[in-house]
Image 1 (spheres, rainbow, N blue to C red):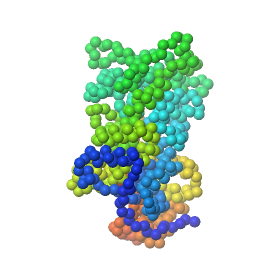
Image 2: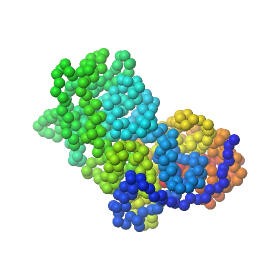
Image 3: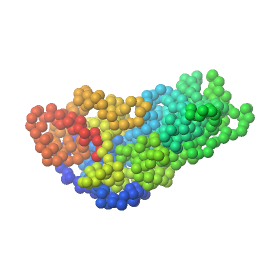
Image 4: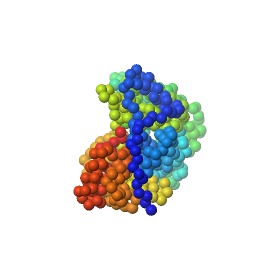
Length: 529
């Protein structure tokens, strides 16, 4: 039996909850301490339902259901902190954040040598095990793809064909936050901190590795030689002096190879039929060095990316341009977040909890009158677009996909939602190999206007939104259920009047479909406020 809508809920007044979370407190201290006029200029907290929508999108990748909105509205106590904990332990958390990490690190590249499903399973299982992000990254750069049980973690390298220049570039920009590609042929002409020796020192961990077509596994794996040095010349050097570089992270010491005899070089020497496995692996050394000498850079990059993910823009922007000539918009906050990542031992949930519980995250997106640059100075929350995943899954959830699938186990529901959302995500996503950016395009408008799959979301199906609205007895009940489903908020008087007028002008099923379509196509649905 489908339970009809509960009585109308009251509008929710804003309310910031005190927190003891050390990350949240450090964030707010850093922001307020950087602006003497902060208390006078900062906006107050967003209202409760706006917070619920915001934090649900950020932690589980979708808008709240009507049932979740109503439960939150009627909850007492520290409801925001409770909501954060509930979302961090929600079945959707690991599923959604695996997709976030995938888009960060694979940038929507198609599968070449490793099935995407294996990679996604590896990320989900790592998140379920609360694996620290530095350990996760170390495993990824150390993977060889030989063990079938661990093949998924090798996708980062294997689907880049283990091409040393490409892998060097992507490790530097995606894990260390410094795009060293322009330092391959010479020191960067405009960034003093990006040196040619930095690029080649990082590549020296990787240049001995190669793609090997294993005849037994009938799959491509990674082999490695025990010899091969990195040499380079600057194109700006008229003398063309050749330099040699041993492995070493930017700003760290070079790592010399151990002295061994030729007989001690290999576990298995490379040949046409045999994968090379040296006793001393430079590539495996990279995984260890990233957790050691690279720990600070790894933490700074993680802090910056998490802040961008949850607020719409990195403290250092672009995200892969961390260097002294591109200072953070609030260096005190950047240092605080970096220290928090290290103190939390790269615990993803600890950082997400801290950001979500901060006053900065919970602030209203409406700036105070006369205050300029409120978003840039953290005085108001940034208005930001939904990611392709957030948009695709929220379209399904808002129109009642989950309600119509009532009774499905969490993992089965996630799989159904993922399958149904693929088309939407594909249409909204940028081209493969590019960072995610908001780029409205013609095909997106056409998708929302007349695609059969969008139209199918508007049709009545037992338990979904159209079904519930058709069963409502009056226009006010329709308006409340509609706006809670679409925007996680109550309608105002004008919106109630618009709904009532729409219901009078056509047959009810058509009017309901038109109302759902109008709201799901709106800017308010597409953005997080």
